[in-house]
Image 1 (spheres, rainbow, N blue to C red):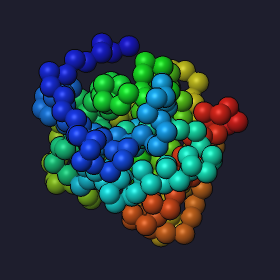
Image 2: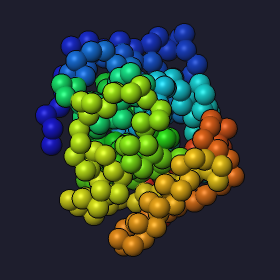
Image 3: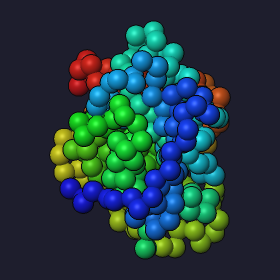
Image 4: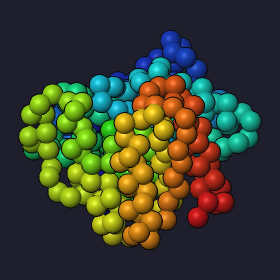
Length: 274
């Protein structure tokens, strides 16, 4: 396991000045060599809980740590599901991707490790910033578009670290980012197969893969790529859930279908999803 990072500085928002349950955190990240941000959400009633599950929720290109909350209403969706008893209490950890140009891909770069930031550092920030998170908190990962690429790829690379994964409108091959980012942005990115292809990462898993799912809108330009990934996983005999819905590559779609991810995670945590 990677040595636990030590943050030289950590700043947390004053709970008296924020929406209930939200915490905004900035740390000095050793993996990135600069400061980075995470927005956390812990649902009502979790103040005295211990070792709550942590859901890493990753944004797409052009985004940042606040996007899932303030464009996707992720905290409100979770609060409604917890209040209804549909999912157990869990904590949302919504980090920035490290803010490399238009998007870091959440992959290792020469001199900066955006993957290490997500896999190793963000869970530690959660334990430092949110009292309900602890050493034994289960870890789950999800994301949209570039964040979906990361969620599925990181499940394949670290199957022993995550209980489950989910992706919405996922990039499936890193080359699909080229139409979205500044030309030349990927010059210093890792070119290892597991860092450029979701399928390669999932097929390379060194341990049995935890449950995972992904979905895509029927009006999304990435629909063909998601269908191809689904078919390739079936051919490879890799168990997964896949769904298609009406909608495109946009926040209305992601707001509607985040509940699918959280309900899926709830099933995994309750042991009803193998």
